[in-house]
Length: 451
Ligand SMILES: Cc1ncc(COP(=O)(O)O)c(C=O)c1O
Image 1 (cartoon, helix red, strand yellow):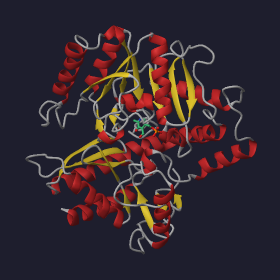
Image 2 (cartoon, rainbow, N blue to C red):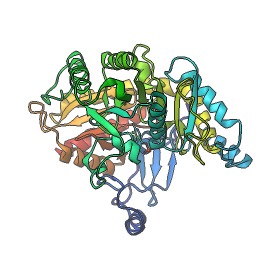
Image 3 (tube, rainbow, N blue to C red):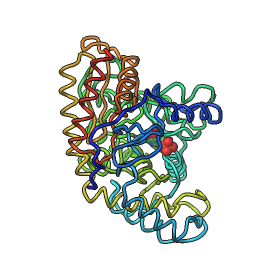
């Protein structure tokens, strides 16, 4: 692991945002679309190194968000920067949809070795998570000759029109866009902290039984015959929906149902993949269950835009011209991805498991201390802290969550909300236990002044 720069604690020297940051925020308000779902606090980045972000006024923040789970190897990891620079000096682009270069088969071969799919695979290259999902949707429709999909409440798969048909984590994502492009039925996600029927805590066996029962005995028997379903799209740890892990029994049940009805099990590892959960893929936590199609983006490129969809080779056997993208498989982005995977295998996945367990233990201590922490959950360095009004009612408290987030920012710690009232921890996977100690001290102080 590359050590972070010597700096140990955030340094906040101006009121936030500082004057230079404010100029950028003002220009942004004038020239940039207002549709971005930015939080109440306003972080402006000028430089990034390791787990640190510096703003234009010289304030330095400890980053426990990593550009929303993207900068897996930390900001500007020197090996990744070198791989990008070396490739930039060779060639930048040659449209892999029409010509050939070594990078696409190299990354395809590497993914073939590591993705949780049985047997030989092939990979389609794109530029974002949503595009990887679009690929998976088209591929499942093409292969099964079916058109319907099953998705989950609380899921997030992107905002392009196909992916949006699946996405359901917030009303704002769909408001104003009318009818959806695809025929998707949403079912509850097996959240044991909030059973979908009672909103009360339950257990893995009960939520598994009840969601599977809902799917098999209601959805399949009424609106959506299974023989018309092309795919079930699963986030093994729901991301934007609140950092909620699915039980192993549930994942196994979905595999059984897909096998029984010829449905594609499409696993969206865009946020949970690439070491984030302490294993290379979140699906690797579930007793060897395999997917038919896996989507990846975010952490695979350490910050370079890349999205990939890997599927069983006999599923990804569509005709020439069926699906392609000018920039997909860009050699600079692939150089970053190859180096990222090397670093992940070289220690960062293990670090995610070890430091993640340490962070989780620290968060659980804060849960014992504060009435407003209802749940601490997740895997590796993908951890969610659900903020509630009190431990008896467990009523979500999004306003308090936002106040805590703001207080953390003002003290130099970057965390971000997800779900209704959850704080997500998705730091770079190079985070150390010393960084965790600093982050938890700030988090503790931020909660104490926000309640
Ligand atoms: C699980 C998941 N799938 C898909 C996406 C869409 O990725 P992108 O924003 O790169 O299109 C996201 C983005 O947050 C995600 O978390």
